[in-house]
Length: 355
Image 1 (tube, rainbow, N blue to C red):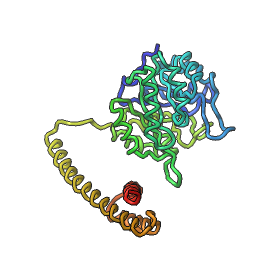
Image 2 (image 1 turned 45 degrees about the vertical axis):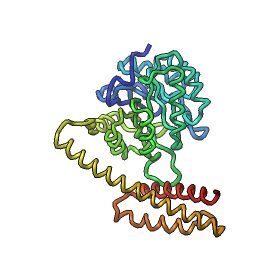
Image 3 (image 1 turned 30 degrees about the horizontal axis):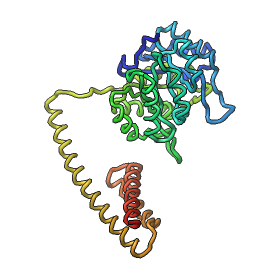
């Protein structure tokens, strides 16, 4: 029976190699990480679900044996990724304390249900990574499958590893923090871990993402570490040495949840009152804008004109994005708002035209 509990420590730091490659590499990495004093759980990929066949897909059961040995040597709990009921059975036999569900598995309700059934009645701790695509319903559905088989909420948590994005971005999987905020609102008490390694895909970017997660009150981090990252058999660019892992973690400022300082409370309340007033004005303007969209829909209907006018939409986007620097607003943020408004306008016009 695992004595480890997800809620036992905040922040919770999970680290280890992307893949268990050899016994020497696994044990050396794990013992060095334990010696830093900043790591709470050791991790390693034993089964590696890769995008394309022919890539290194893990050493399997041998890796579990090496991780179990690392646990005995260091006294730290161990974690591995599982993608099937058989993986769960083997991991629990080797005394794995924490199982995580990878992003490629979360997208499959069939696979998630098989894993959930396999942990039914056990004391396993489970972390569920977000699916590859930004789908809160899919992520939430995976959580509910574990809750329904009796996994206690205190032993169930989430990993935010970013989302696949079509197009150029310096991050491997952009975080889309707003998606995760929506997920956290559904499960406010559930452990939320950030995975800077997979968000960044580049070790030079890890510190900033890790600090952002701390600022957003995440409960911990899972970061990949390897004794010789450049020679790693998988995801070499995003792994760091144990020494650099220690430096990264110690440089994070884990801020207080709140303070009773009267000056802080007064200032915060004043700013929040300003935001409430601005929100009221903002949504009043949106309401007025949508009423105009309704009238446009009526005009198009009466003249038998199609809803979507591509050139008009392009000119709006170009005009607004051209003001991004002047407004001191991020272009991606403006695009997100514009697209949301555009979709609502189209839906309302469609309703008017088909009444």
